[in-house]
Image (cartoon, rainbow over all chains, first blue to last red; front, side):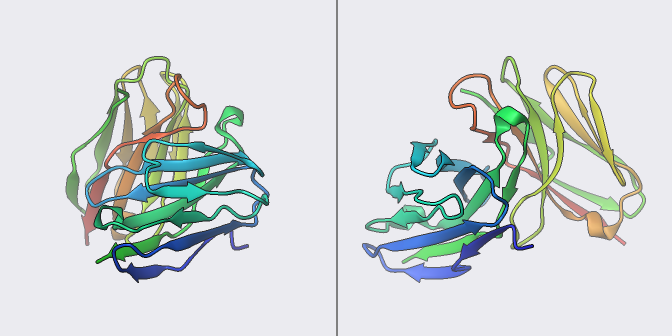
Length: 114
Length: 112
């Protein structure tokens, strides 16, 4: 039972490059989320999705894009990478907070931009 | 702005030495408080959800409690394997119902 799988686990990018962080889940959850975690800071919500074809901005969406074409996958796109986007990125899924379901997290993608 | 403050930032205990971690919040009309455990290099792992003042939840050596303005995570007779960062998150009443606000965490170290 894989749960939430994130790839890659580590990546180094040059300033201005682009990349896509992958997240896939086998929990059949409708809700999916992307967070970033900086050292000494709390998790910050980037984008979230309440189902295929529906996405919405979180607290820190600038510099990122998402899409949700299937229930299982929720990729996060970085365009024109900047040093400020160096962080650990976590994907999470949930059956929905409205139904009192907690969020379940993957093990993260550690991204460095140099 | 909704605020979640966790204290202390770091806590070092001897094995068997019980203590408590604090999570205070300024959200009015809380619609849920969540505790997570995070090991180095891993994603947060769900522990508890609390919804109303007076509520308590237990799991092994951990017990979470909730008042109107704060939550405590009590650790009884901790073992080295309890060493981790403990995160608190709240679900505020305003804004998107799916959003959680996280604290910065308490890093717990339990020495043998």
